[in-house]
Length: 331
Image (cartoon, rainbow, N blue to C red; front, side, top):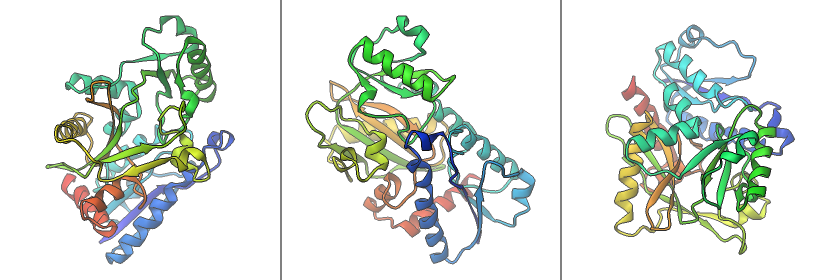
């Protein structure tokens, strides 16, 4: 089979100035691993790294001679919305492509809109508000809260200071995000400090849950247990060394079906297909609450999807084959 392997070519961006370019460069780990798997599975590879200036149209994609597009494009640095825009071009090309389509990618990038969709389907999310500095007087949540970019991913903009305990800290973080993400409100959520899990759902017509992972924090007392940018992308940092993953997670008998039902419902409600990751934390009553749906999670060998596939007995080459089969099933 001829497979077009498409990904964003790392380029200089505003993330460099904030020391957050590692997430953009990290896509190359997934590219290298998928390339090896495709070669191992005797596929012919047509490699298409995309630069922001690339002139790509549905017609040029369709004329490229591929049978399937393996889509590892995560959006151009600083322009996360380009991830969904490109998936729209893939759909217009008429070729089967891996992963979620444009509507799911656009929705899940907008964390507040995703919360509203999940709530409409009876799922639990944190209480939240969208806030700009000029609207701080309308704050009506309970401290502590966590302050995030409303439309970004990969833990961009997240540090220990993102958890705030009083109005002054809230104002500081909302102001910081206005500077770093101009024109975009901050997403402020009531902070849940219970156990944290992530769950991969994959499939098309009959999606299923892979074994669940738990994020295990051993941070110093007083540090909030959150997955900061450093914990995710900077191996030399204390946050990274003091944050581990256990897969499969040890789940109480009542918890596994709750997470499974919520994850499968969230996958369907947000229109995901192929594969997606749903992040959870437990509230004070020990009930799972959905923090986020990632419709285009990292496929690197040491990332969550591959880790959870391994726990299900699926090695990396077979994981790639399954993802291609999902694309054909969705076509």
